[in-house]
Length: 92
Image 1 (cartoon, one colour):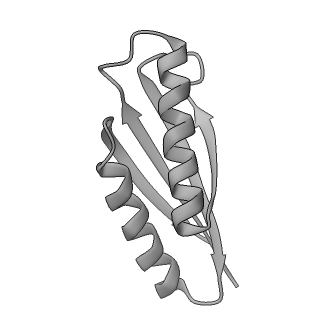
Image 2 (cartoon, rainbow, N blue to C red; image 1 turned 120 degrees about the vertical axis):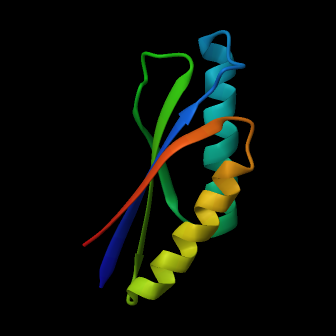
């Protein structure tokens, strides 16, 4: 069994208040969860309006499956209005 976690960090220059940030977070979490059947949580920068830190997690019997999955997740994340600053994947 392989557990994978992909950490994504976004900069949201267009966000002017916490309400807009929450809308962005809700939209991207819903999209990733429904499209890729992964768990998504906001794990960093809760106190900053224009930064978002998300963790995307999944489990598989094969690491290659997770690598392909996280590639698709990153591509999807890049397509959103925020600017993807960092992507780091860890396997256990």
